[in-house]
Structure formats: structure tokens, C-alpha cells
Image (cartoon, rainbow, N blue to C red; front, side, top):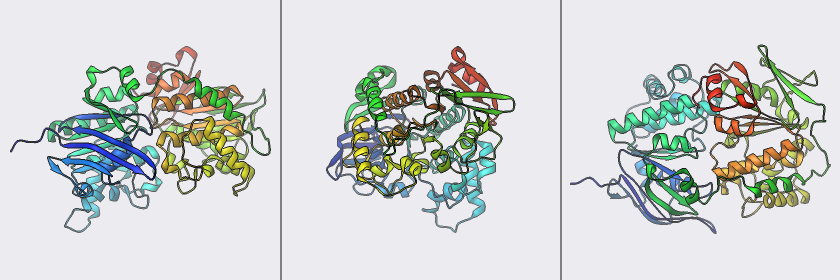
Length: 508
């Protein structure tokens, strides 16, 4: 019998959540031995579709075939049997289990023998060594809950790579990886494709990576197929962006929205911005950077170095090696709450663990920072009014302020995290990969919001592993080597992708 041309074929897929229709007859087909880029803006339906073909959601209509067989309602069974593996944008690891136990889990669900700690550790080391041999050796016994986002991302990918699946679904897998780790991941994918005929559905907003690894692309727009299986060498970046319904030009609305949102004051009318003469200095190992009001200082390099500095600035780790001072006086905080009350804001791209309050409605997420600053917790009419104005000003489409954040796309959730700091005008705003997993338009909107805050006096520290982002936003960049040590300060014309790669030891 001839093999079917596609390993997975989805036709006329429909999915709604209450009154909101997300997928409107969407089609996508993936062939064995190919990397298929799945592209679309935030909220277009990408994650919903991936959750359907990985058995996490049931479709409302349409057909799914895997290896020529109609799946019917048996999608989850194929996942459990190991035929389909997924790396979700929001990681799905169990924090109370070890790295080895998390990686071994997919095989344990279909195993017939007893659990073996020794064999699970061996499996975990083999899977992790595909991407980072050093991390593999030192991490297998650690609890996942003790890992950084970056380390958890490696574990999630290793679990999928070691599953033996025939179809691999990767939803923003490189969002928190270094360039070197991304290169190793791509090499592993190519080897698996050559050896096993693996099919990969790859979601990313980084066009450079898409062109490095993918063969064809399908573009989703408003829940429908806008482009079906286009060869990537036959479509330009600008054509892709146009088909997504987005623009790569600066968004004038975003700048206006920022101005509108900045007019929304806290009830106390307090402003937390630095006075004209204020300056924050950070120093370690003889390298010193001055952060003045209105400046955007970038952090470049592998996660270890930037994370330590971010922790020192935001009250997560006051006792590390960084000397942080404001106007010459030590700037130390016992907790992130204390930092927030002194005008230090923090926004992370790790929405699930460091930002979004998943069990609380949108309004609580919007005013969370203000409640910390004002030491209160009860929702009031003023907060509802403020939340409504913030949603309108930032063009955030939500059914209701009382809906949960899970009803919004990942990029829209990220805008919520920015929005909560706008009325407070913090003295210092610290950003940790704030555009992780968001589309081009949302990135531009976030850029405009942060630039507006800087223009009104906020000092900004921005860590990103996307060098093009640092080049666009920052006049000063502090670089770190692969071991987390600061290597130097780049300014003005020195801030370019080549210099950043040289200073960090990481490819651009």
C-alpha cells in the first residue's frame, strides 16, 4: 500500500470558546521529513490548533487524519502512544518532580515495566545532551521547580526530542534559548528528520530562524488559512507579514495609545518617576554603567549574567555580586514588593510564572502593581473604570474585564503586563525578554509603550536574546559572557549585532 503524502492532514477545523470562534474552517497538512513553519499573528489561532492536534482541546468540526487514518476522537490516544509530541509556548512540566522524572514521563505512560530511577536518569541525560551536555550532567536530579525559565525550556524540548514521536509540534521553542542552543536544536531536528523521517510543525515569530530550519509555511489569519504550504524560498518576509495582516512599520496607534494610557493616574495621584538629577549605577568587576532617567539600557548574553543583575535590581536576590546604587546610596530591597513600592517595575516574558495571575480576572491583572504600591487588595469602582480605559487605550480586545487572562492570546497577555505599570510611571522599569513569543505588531506596540515611558522619565533596563531588538531600542548595552560575567559596555555606533556577538560569545 502506498504511503499517504501527508503524515497529518487537517481539513475545515472549527473551534469556538463560548461565543468566540477561534478557528473558522482551517486547513493544514504536514508531510513526513519536513519542517513546516506555522505562521500568524497573536490571536490568529495557532496555539488553539496545536492544542487540538496534540489532544488538549477537542475540535467542534472538521476532519483530522494521521498517517492516512481518520483520528476521530482519538487524538489524545496518539499522543499517549508517543506518535505526537508537543512543546507548548507555556511550558507543561511538573515542578515537584525531578528533571529525569519529567523527561521520562511520556515513556512511562506507555511502559509495561516498573519505574527505574537509574534508567530515567540515563534517558534524561541522553535527551538533554542533544542540546546542552553540561546542563544534562548537572541537572537530572534537580526539581523542575528550582530551574529558571531558560532551563525549563531545555527540559521541555529534551522531553519531546527523546519521546520517539513521528510528529513534533514546537510552539515558540526557541523563545528563551541562546543562539548557540538554538543552533544545536536545529542540528538535532535535521538529524532526526534524516534518520527517521520526523515531521515538525514549527511556530516562531523570528523570521531568521524560520528560514534557517523550515521548508514550507502555512499562514493562519483570523482562524482561516491565508497561505497553504508555500515554499519559503518562494515567499518574501514582507509578503508573509502582509498575509498575516500585519505591518512592520512603526504603529502610530501604539504611540497614541501609550500617550493615552500614561494619562491614567493612580487614585492617589502619585508619580514615581526619577527627578532630573537622579541616576542609578550598577557595578561589578570594575565594569560600571550609569542608568539615567529616560535611558534604555540593554543587557546582552546568556541568561545567567542578566538574570543575576535583574534579581539584584528587583529585590529577588539582594546579596549577589552586583553593587547597585541610587545617587551614591546602596539600592537594596528585601522583596519585589518593596522594590515596587520604591518605584521599580518588572515585566517578564515568562508570563505563566512571573506575570499573569491565571486564576484572577483581567481587571485584577491590570491593577496588580498599583495594589502592591498602595498596599490593598479589594477591587473598587475606580479600578474597573481604569481597567476599561487601559483596555481601550491599548486596543486590547477582551470580552469582559471579569474574563480570565486565558481567554486572551499570549501576546495580548503580555500587553496586560506592560499596562499594569503605565499609570504608575515607575522610576525604573526592568524588562526580562518582554517580547517572548509575540508577533511583529505586538512587538511594535510594546516598543512604543516603553519608549513613551522612557520619554516621560522612566529609566529602562531591557534584557533580550534578540540582538536586533537591542540594536533598535538601546543606546547602551551591557554585555555578558557565557559564564555570566560582564565583559564590557557598548554605546552608540558600537551597538550592532556583530559587536554584540563578539562581546557575548553568542552568534547573532
